[in-house]
Length: 245
Image 1: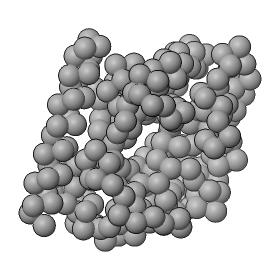
Image 2 (image 1 turned 90 degrees about the horizontal axis):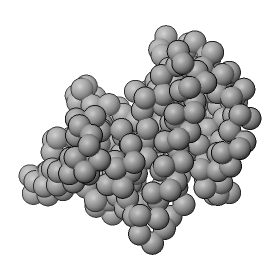
Image 3 (image 1 turned 45 degrees about the vertical axis):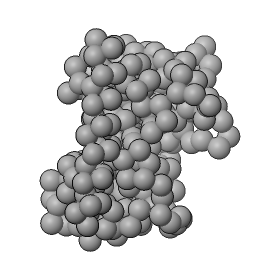
Image 4 (image 1 turned 180 degrees about the vertical axis):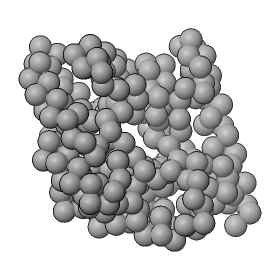
């Protein structure tokens, strides 16, 4: 186990160093960017090793898999558990009751269910609004490729902001997969502009967080304004099993 912890610690530290370098290139404070270590499809022993290696924020894609890990690792009470994957309506209760943060709020219907279950659990759920800036059918989120149609988003955003048990903190996106990290740059820039657009339309709201960038392009994401980057393979290695629960 110690060898695994050492290996993950080395990768984790290297990733933090690269984030810091990207931040400095963009004239940003490295401390303004948080690293979410993605542990989806990793067994509990790997997740434990990641925590022992220093990871303080863990990202999961599947609610039930994530809840199993949360319950198995309760001694690490300081760890933040972030849901970063698409949430089916029937899994909203599990997310509202167990996770510290949601990156992937992608519809008004889901927002209403999360708000209800958060209220029942006596919790406020910090969340990000997911936008599909590439308008890919395979991706979730409000469609936001055409900037001329951004005014059409305001009604839904206003409705989410009005929900008392959700705390909107910013935006999240997953750009189309490209062959180079730089392929993602225009998509990151678009969602940064969307962040500014929503901030100007809802001056009392908090849109300060921007979740974008994965193992393949997180340095570019940092250069373009990400405050949360989601890195899995580069730190914990390839997925060890695949499960959809």
